[in-house]
Amino acid sequence: MGRFPFGIPNSWYQVCYSDELARGEVKTVHYLDRDIVLFRGHNGQAGALEPYCPHLGAHFGHGGKVEGDNLACPFHSWQFNGAGTCVHIPYTDKIPSKAKAGAYPVLERNGIIFVWYHDQGLEPHFEIPTIPYWGDPAWTSSYEKYSWIVKTHPQEIMENAIDWPHFNFVHLMDPPKDRSNSFHGPMFKWQIGTKKEVQTMGVTDSFTIEAENWGLGFDWLKYTGMFTTMIVAGLTPIDTETTQIHFGVIGAKDGRSEEETRALLKAYMDDQSLAIQQDFQIWEHKGFQVRPSLCEADGPIGEYRKWTKQFYSRDWSEAVAAA
Image (cartoon, rainbow, N blue to C red; front, top):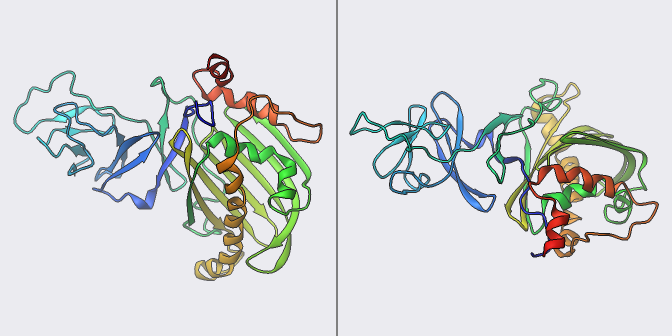
């Protein structure tokens, strides 16, 4: 079974930033233990297909081209739309009824392209919301981007949000005060107040973090302290034990120009990226405890784990019992 009993959760996952997929471009990414072929039609709409053409099996990502708003196979130029439906065959007017490629629901929001994964092929039951301040002219207009590949699972990463004691011992923050959390369907929100040394600036910052986690693949965190920033994080499984963390940060301009704000906030944003890296060694070597020995002062880990079970087709605790 490996270190984690979960499998890949049913959720929305970031596959790229919007500015990384141009009109007319085809791009192959490897997530969710498979290739996914992304394309953007000339109408601006993004699509995501399974890699192999249902005709004779050519890989769309190796020589496939955008024709109009569709993706054309490199082998015989059959064209498929974003829903995977074959809409044109250049050498016949009769399109076979079974000529349909596997397709993923796509959501483009907050400057990010998401695909929906469900291990039984069910449609999305929630959406990623528009995050506060994205597109607000008083904030920077694009992300300062960070990315890491870590040998861990999205459920383990999100569990850190309500593991209050670790903020002190791992991140060297003051024990969080004014902390709160609540669970609402596919979302949970949390908030803490604390302070820490900003390693990249050599100063101490008192700040609050307000956050929302949506599904097991996306969250945002608003830091309010020396500066005001918003971290937008995508947690995308590469396979069942490896996750790519996409970490984009925007900041409030506070009357400054875009260039001034970026230059001023770069060290502050870099420190925020260092904070998550402090967890990597633990995540990569820990083993999931199905029945952890928790003490009274631990965060609401049990409540969090009950919340996560909605994102799996099978209760992972039952999978452990059956193993």
